[in-house]
Image (cartoon, rainbow, N blue to C red; front, side):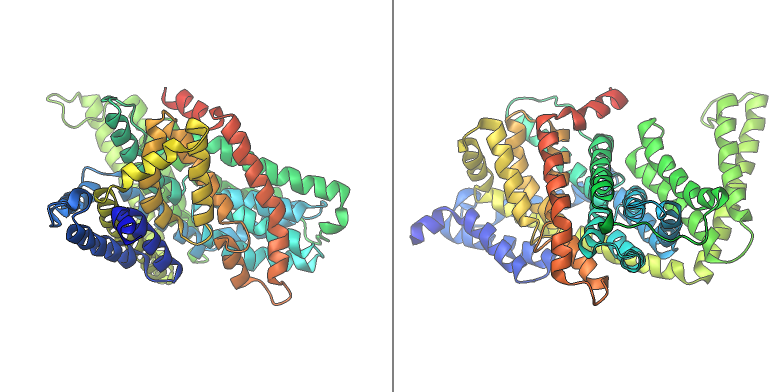
Length: 528
C-alpha cells in the first residue's frame, strides 16, 4: 500500500491540494506549499523527474513566471483593466439605474420584471464580466421589487442568480481572458507533443467571439422559459402596477451609454481594430466617462467633449496619413496630424474632468482598492499554480492523466465527458481561478492530443463552470444571492428557483456538444 502511494505521488499530491482547499486554506499558498512539499517528497523517494534526489527540476519555475508576466505577454494585462471597468460600472450605479428603468419599461407585462432582470444581466455581463458583483447588485435592487409585486420567491431568486452568472460566458469575461491564456499555452504544447509543429494559435479574441452565440443562446433560453411561465402560469410572475411610465428619452439616456461601451469593447475586437488587451483599455476609459457623468450633478460636457474628440480623431484617420515615422510628410498630412493632436487634447481634457469628478465623489479610491485586491489575488494564485503544476508534471502527473483519459471508453468524446464531469463537481467547491490554473493545464493537453478543437473545448469549459456555479447546494452564485436576500427568502427558495435554470444550462451544454459550430463558426467567419 505504501509503495503504491509512493509510485503515485502525483495523485496523492492532487488529493492533498483539493482537501486543503476544501478546508478553506488560502488558495495561492496552498498550491505553492503543496507543490514545494511534494517536490521534496519526490526528491526523497527519487520519483519521476526528481529521480536524481534533488529539486533541480523546479529551476524553470522562475523562467515560467517571467515568461507569463513579462512585457511580451500582453494578454494578462487585460485582467486588471477589465476588473477596473467592471468595478467602476458597479460602484457608479450604472447597474442600478438600468434595472430600475428596464423594470418600469417591461414590468407592466406578465413576466416583464423577470425578463428585464435577464436583459440587464446580459448587459451587465457584457459590461462588467464579474459574476459576484452582478448577482449582488441585482439581488439588492430587483429582489425586493419582485417580492413586492408577488413574484414567486423561487422564480425571482432563480432569475437573478441565472442572469448574474452570464458574466462567466458573455464577453468580455475575466474567465475567458484567463482561460484563453491557459488554453493557448497548453494547446501549443500538446500539439507539438504529437508532432504538429505549426498549430494554429488560439487567442482570447477567438474565445470572445466563440462565446457570443452560446451566450446569446443561453439568454434566449432563459427568456423563453420565463415567457412560457408567464403564459401558462401567470400567477408566478404577475405584471407590475407601473404608475409612472418611462419615456423613450429616459430609456435612451440609460440604455445607450452601456450599449455604446459594449459595442466599443467587442466591436473593436470583432472588426480587428484592437486586440482584447487594447479593447480592455477602451472599456476602462469608457467606464470612467460613464462614471464621470453620474458622479456629480453637473453638466455632461466632459463626456461630450471626450466623445467629440474621439470621433473626430477616427474621422481624421480616414482622410489623412497620420504616420509620424515617415521620412517625408506632406503639408496636408501635417495639418491632419496637428488637428488630430488637438482632438486628442480635447479627449484628454474630457477624460481628466471625468476622473476628477469620480475622485471627488470618493468612487475612484474605492475602485482602485478593489481592482488592486482582485488583481493581486489573481496573479498570486497564478504563481502558486505554476509551482503546483510544475511539481505535478515532474512527478509524472501529466502522463498519468493522459493514460486515464485515453483509457476511458468513447475515445475523445469519453475523455471530454470525463473532464467536464470532474470540472462540474470541482466547481461546487473551488473558484474558477483554481480550476483554470490547476485543473485545465492538467487535463486539457490530452483533449488536444486527441484532436479536439481548442475553442470548442474552452467554451464548453466556461459554460460547464457557469452551470456548476449555479447548481445547489454549493453553487457560488447561490451564496452571493443568499448574502443579500431579505429574511423572508429561505435557502430552499433559492435552491428551488435555480433548478429549472440549471436544467436549461445542461440543455445548452448538450446543444453545444452536439453542434460544436455554435462555438467555432463565428471565429472562423470573423478571423478567417
